[in-house]
Length: 331
Ligand SMILES: [Fe+2]
Ligand SMILES: [Fe+2]
Image (cartoon, rainbow, N blue to C red):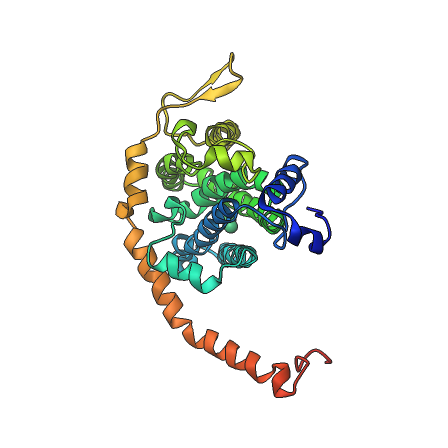
């Protein structure tokens, strides 16, 4: 957003600031951290970016569960890279959220105390190796469908973080697809394992797009602010249409007897989603909710010494201590 010089912004009254903000959003300009923004816009972004960041780091757990049991060195290396990417996504997003004046400590505290959510999909267990493939193909695939439009989000730091995240997510989606393809073309038992994983992950993946449009609490306002560009149902439909031919090439079936091409709509029809299950998992009653949060809290406690050491190092090399340069800066 290119606003007037700061001195004139200071003297503008709220309605003029609001008009400038609305005009910038309407013109598809980016809102930057120092720009004036409505309190509700800031609060919505903090909530969404925090939830997104939390999902990235909690999402490391179900897959990390299989790193030590990956069937080959190649698969292990790919999976480790993927899980590390997710940690990186969390870091970009916490940093982007910090530009809105909220600290990382505060956000993590809200995650650990259950006051902020993460994506419910990560409350399902990874029972077999094929789940790693199903997560890559379906869960990362759904994430991409959601996140590509966020690259054009009105808030600059969030939009820019999404560009890199989406590039990495496409690698995740491909590795999952390739893993499932190998299993699907393998022995009968491997094929069955792949099919079972897809059967379990398909419906929760569709729930990742959130409740239907007429029940979605934040959708309309987020669309008006251009934080969101498409509705939940639109994105869900797009995802189903993408997955159907991919499932066919994989030689796997999607567990929905109502799934068929609708010539008139130019889209696939699909069966009803179990929103009761979604609400249950959201309320904390999913198969792994407690386990995920316990593990996260413990990881945070175990990492306390690293944070302390980093702070001590920073203090030692602060300008007041007489060292203005990082010791390695001149190396
Ligand atoms: Fe990610
Ligand atoms: Fe990912």
